[in-house]
Image (cartoon, helix red, strand yellow):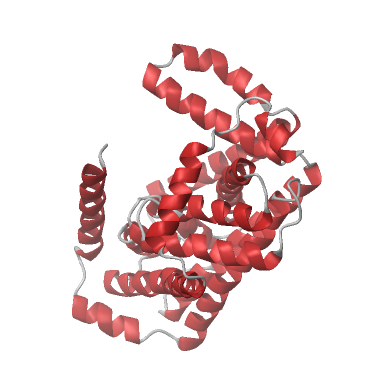
Amino acid sequence: MSRHLRTIAIVGLTGGLLAFFLRAVDPAVVWREMRGGDPAWLGLALASTAFLHVLRAWRWQVLLLPLGLARFTNALRTTIIGFGLSALLPARPGEVVRPYLLARREGFSKTATFTTIVVERLFDLVSVLLLFAVSSTFFDPGLTQAGEGILTAVTVGAAVSGVGALLAIGLAFAIAGRPVVLIRLMGPLTRVLPSRVADFAGGLVEKVAAGFSVVRQPGALIAALGLSLAHWLVLALGVWSAALAYGLRVPFSGSFLLLVLLTVGVAVPSPGAVGGFHAALQLGLTEFFAAPPDRAAAAAIVLHAISYGPVALVCLALLASEGITVGALRRAASEEETAAPMPARGRGEESAS
């Protein structure tokens, strides 16, 4: 897809999600609701969001240990710059920029540093699914007003999520020991798939295998998984605080269901997840927790501003202090990613040594 067509698609998708988000609300009422949020709970949501970047930097330090000890200040600065750029631009360019910047600052292999991001994303997915399964199975998610069909869907979803998360954790540790095994296992499958699908699946498998070939220390993986769980617990605290700030009856255990929906919403490649974030949170609050649409919209707008606004501003300040423009940084990182081949069989092990 050309750049212009991609831009048109992103704009159209973002506009459609915003239209869905605003379909049943009164802007004047939403504005009034936004101003009525409890400052103490909103302050807790802001503090939780700020602490998330510290946890992300700590986790990244752990994943990078096989390459060397990255300085925390560098890990934190590049983490903020990466997430800030993803808040400002479509297609999440920060996922490319931050490993590029850190590798350059620390003298690490750029290819190996890129692959640790793959491990991060997998642990994020595993963590949110595992916490959703535990919270929905062993605690009351607060869906007393939901219909029987919704309750059944949540129960089944929690069970499937729990099993899937445990299987993914086991697979992750197995791949860390012998990363080429995954490539060999997927070989017969890719041969029966259509060529385009096979190429995509093969490339994805090689990236995952390369990521785990860098992080082969069981202790590092356990620590990274623990920090990932802590990261999502703090993220849930922020969502829960924003809901309470607007008087919405969402128990803490119910916030993990909202996080699953938000994970889907922010996957939309719009700048700063605009539209996807708002629609996902509003849908979760209204459908699962019987929140009034105007109040749910207010909570979604304010939480999005808290989640994306400060990190974007700090990112711009950090870039300005170093005399780096957003456009130049994005071009440099894209060229570096294109020039550096993704490790195939055995390459990740060489990078880590």
